Image 1 (cartoon, helix red, strand yellow):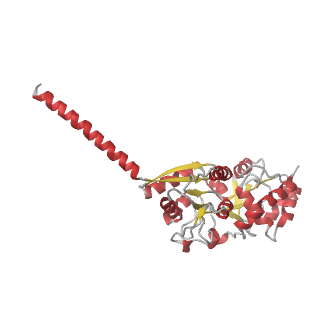
Image 2: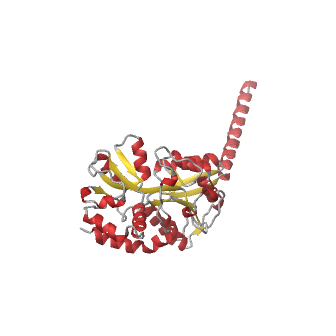
Image 3: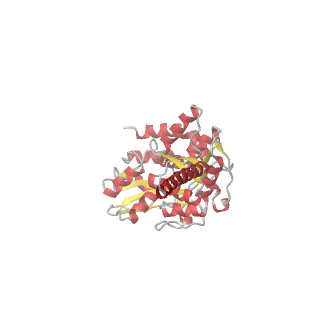
Length: 335
């Protein structure tokens, strides 16, 4: 064997050994990273942005996530829990009612993050089981060419708007269910208000996205819809106007919570810390939502926070009354 061929063989052996060593290091590095399983009802793009930002701030945590509508996500979770499984570590879903249900079942872990002085006590559970991350109000939307410019909830029951108002159904939309519970338990409105809407030809159907499309297209010049959807699309040139009625608005808060039997509780606590932090709330604003944290500016197009009057709401009450309210709603709007 020539000296040259010996050197070649030696270099080859060293290359193989070095490659194997690097592979072991890579495997070890992957294994040392902590995992986090997130269940969320955020829109897919928003969810990916949230996960990417969290992982950038916490490079030692790898996030897996499942995205679906809140109703389907909660049904999936309940089936898993019934089977003795707790797959997610943390939840980030549309409404507090879903998390209040889990709290009453003893499924959530209490946690007290820092920075709560920047959050209204209305936005989180007093015992620390869930925390609102956004302020998503329901208001009035109308097409810019509409004959009327409704400014108050009662305007939607005006005969001048008969058969022209689109509204999401609380049988389908969580935000619509919270809107229903908020209004029927407020002395300004009650069930009489919904009976007036039904008499005026309002036919609730589907979710907020479908309502907005009808108003933007002009097929229904007036509607009831969540604010971020209308304001975000208006900024893109959609021919609509959005109103926060002075009497007040209902609001969902997209709360975050940790599962009691989470496999990775420390990673889950760090996720809660992140979404409630200034950095996490600035991302909320960049995504086009009104942040729950009071020291983070709202996106362009939103009014000052103190110009939005939130009507009283209780997640506990809404959970207790949900079935009865859905039944009464169905009676009022049945064909």
